[in-house]
Image (tube, rainbow, N blue to C red; front, side, top):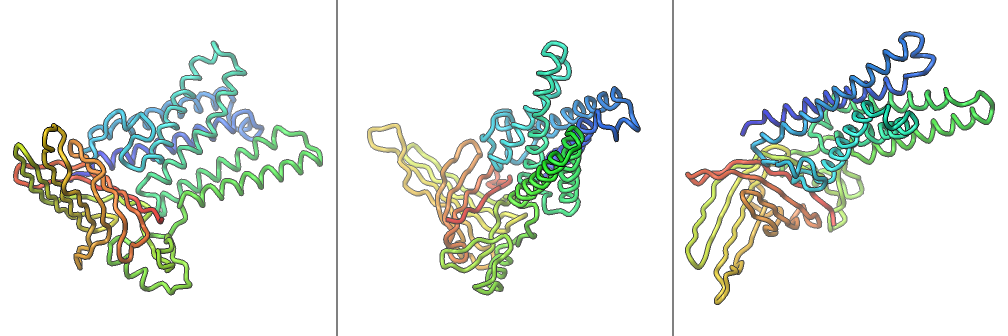
Length: 365
């Protein structure tokens, strides 16, 4: 399937992030002696406002261009209501909250004379939460996070904002011994907090295996007492690497039959991308006697190793509605002790084939 909308959204997202970074830098620098040497305050403020407005434009494009995406067919509800997205719900929710915060801050420029400078300035402090949320959203939901250039952007922009914030804070404080001590403490605490938060996002995690065979080989090559990068302990206590989340193309065939009393669906597909595997789904229902409600007689969903056919994860469908499929399963073999949640949006064709995308996450028990 085509990736145009996904690529455009990612490009717009990075553009918006860099514009937001520029706006934050200009806002922090405004009114400092260093900035006053080169620019007039009014000019800095105008550029600060303009880059914020331009960032909002690209964020809006980043969000709403996904309405044309052919993978998940995401609607306005999933794009604007937190925790409703089928793709990485909490990570996308952080982005939604950041989007609304950016709208509020940009709007505040144009109502400043009505709400007063003090209220406007207090509202403007949300910019720090906005930038932190945008950074967290990009790192945790972006598919480019492990790329060196993306890591350079996040680390570079984050470091500059932290350093400028510290400079602005100490610039406003009196120059005496107690103030200097406070500056040093505040700067160190800010840097340590930022580093801890970055470590928690997975920005520094090593590249993960991309196929079932690679994952199994990596697990076998790690000695029992050696920690595996990006791994979690399996049920046996042995370290075993797994993917926190993955996004794949998904296509295959399906057979569906239905009559007045029963229906049966079999779906077999292949995934390719972050994690190559086979998916087998079987769902059968029959009409209950004296009731309009159908009983589920078969509900089976499996992820299989494409090389050996061995079951990697076995479970069942938890949602099947208008082409949206959600699976909950428990790992087997090398994935024992790991729960997986898979979500897919597929489009079926009359010839019995389908195509779409599948995303998932793995959680150690």
